[in-house]
Image 1 (cartoon, rainbow, N blue to C red):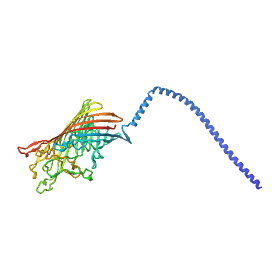
Image 2: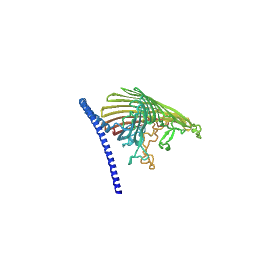
Image 3: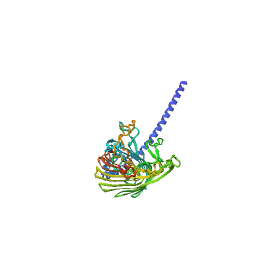
Image 4: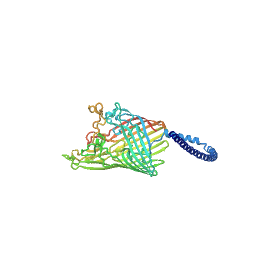
Length: 562
């Protein structure tokens, strides 16, 4: 019975399994029937779509035929577009970083300078240091190679829309560090030329701040930065008569049509020169190392920045500028320094005002020639001339006295061929004799100031022996040429005449420019007359003005990046 019962249970289980499988089979059959119905519906839909697509294909064929007819030049257009895109990728006009457009600026130079009379200078000429005949340096020449005027920089421009933001940096290597020399490594230092930021609105207003060319410097367009008109000389001091500074400042300008009005406040500094001055004043001090100024250079204690106003007009027949320059000169003087027992009691500050007027004009005479004139004149404006004649001298009582100066430069630039420029420049700078008769203390009766005629010029033409044996430092033997004895030689006028040619061997907007320049300059320095024999004021006294000249030849080969 137990065995039969087990068999019955097994049969029940088998029947249950069969029922389950039957139910699953029925569900699968139902699903298949549903899928078949769906497939049938889709087939009906596809048949309808196929009919519609047949009509669409027919219409598309007609449209393609029309496109083939109307777009015969499409292949050429695509080819041209591809070339433009390739040029933009391989030869971009600027580098793009986020929303900023970066344009590199650079040239690489090998230059040389020959001077008939040595100045121990690179391609930068200290015009007012040209030696008189009595200096030993006047009887030796110099020839120097240089690559230091090579320049690197970049322009950064962001244009949000309502205004444009710009930043510019430019540097060269015409600076000497404490370890710079030409014995082996020629390791000269990088020099800041320009670094400024700018914001310009769409209504013609521009604000610029940083180190830049002074507003006094002539420009090609309005008073815009980076359009400065520089003499095209290899000499990195440019040319006698050229008025300029590169210094920190803030400039505001507004354009209205072809007229631009601008005002700038710029870094002030004083160039001082005096003979027979009393030790009863000071105008500044040597640079402080902790203040990051040069420890071996003097700095004036400025009471205010220089203020410059300029108006520029751009016309079809040229570019014209006129403006004014205002300056303030302060010293601290001590009236009681000249007493028998000198005293600082009564020390006081005194400020004198200087300034002047300047004008620039540049016009194309023909398609092949441009003519330019520049003039700056006033009191205390010598610093703005390339020869850096003095701004001020001093009264016997210790108060400053601005010196009258003027600067003039005329230029004729010819372009007979696309690759060739022929340039002619003449410039001159002047500093007026400014002296006062002292009635103070032991110096009573002496002339005090700039270029007193009572000072001796007797030795300006007499060569002297080397001056010292030294101790191995710079200027020690045998690097110690003689300097004239009894020769004040205060400069009255410096003049320069230059002729040069610039030839561009190769000029490509894609690969850059290779050019060669040869410059010849004749430089003359004329001093104020001084005593050459006898006693000042006597009937037998004679007077003479020393003269110095220099013949200079510069060459330069430069590669400018595009």
